[in-house]
Length: 97
Image (tube, rainbow, N blue to C red; front, top):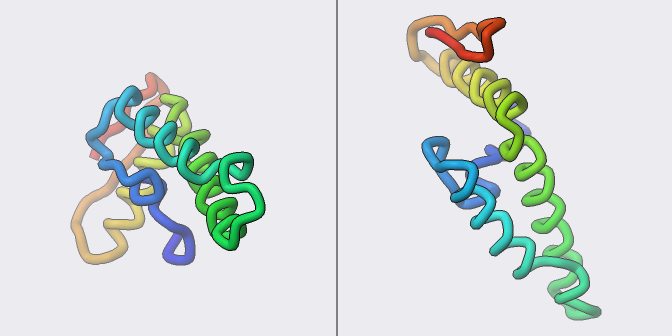
């Protein structure tokens, strides 16, 4: 995961943000970097990349199940950096550490 960007960082959000807050951040980025808005400007290539990153982050974080799975993976990655404990997903949809 070290090569991947943190999806919350891509949206400029925090893991504690609600889905509505994440949607708002995504919509702001989509309006700012959408290829149709950038046209043929010199910023178009980097804008398209940012738009695609934001879109990919929103696809994961907007769904309750994929967001929970992503959060569990993030926690597991954080544990590899020296934190103690275990994180498990639960069949009921929750998680425990």
